[in-house]
Image (cartoon, rainbow, N blue to C red; front, side):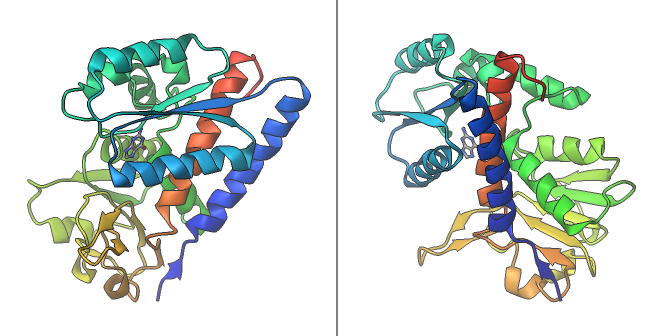
Length: 285
Ligand code: GUN
């Protein structure tokens, strides 16, 4: 039977550490600001943005929300990014993805100053993650690393399987596990014998975006199972990529959805924004 990894409790601890450091900076006259940009009215994005604003209030950051209409042009969005790049009160810029189809996401990500790119999506930050020389952690994979650390399971030398190869989660996730000396396999839609590959994993991270995709035959007895999925079922219920009820008996540790990876992503975003402010003010990390 699995032990449940409590992402809510672990994220609260991270946020409380960020809050303490933020208060210490405030005492020195340094305040921290995060700009959150949302374009259009994707309901999931709205929920994420509201949660990010709430987290800013919890840790003592200022948050600046820019809610732009669905028909915003790329030029208009790039002009806003340029303004935020130059704004000294803004330490971090987060443009919520996905963007409407008339806007090229890559052009927008590339326009954000790397030192304010708290998502770590800019090619400069992605490159730094690749070579292991990074200040900004990619938020979701970094949150997953904290969850794995909380189990006490050592990553070094272990079989780690990541299902999904997105730029936001799968690829940086694999890289962070590799930096900790895991033996890492990335699976995707063309992978042959997927269940067999997954069932070798001591640490299994599911980031596929398909409800209940991971079934017990894909889980090794006692494995750490981390569910990055956030799928909305027809009945409106949230559900992960892992068939939680079915895998619960077999896994050693498992994350619930909601209450697992989700809150960690936001906590790591707060940590990155704090890091940005510390670098700008030449404070040791
Ligand atoms: N959309 C889904 N996840 C994310 C994220 O971590 N950052 C941004 N900017 N957009 C997202």
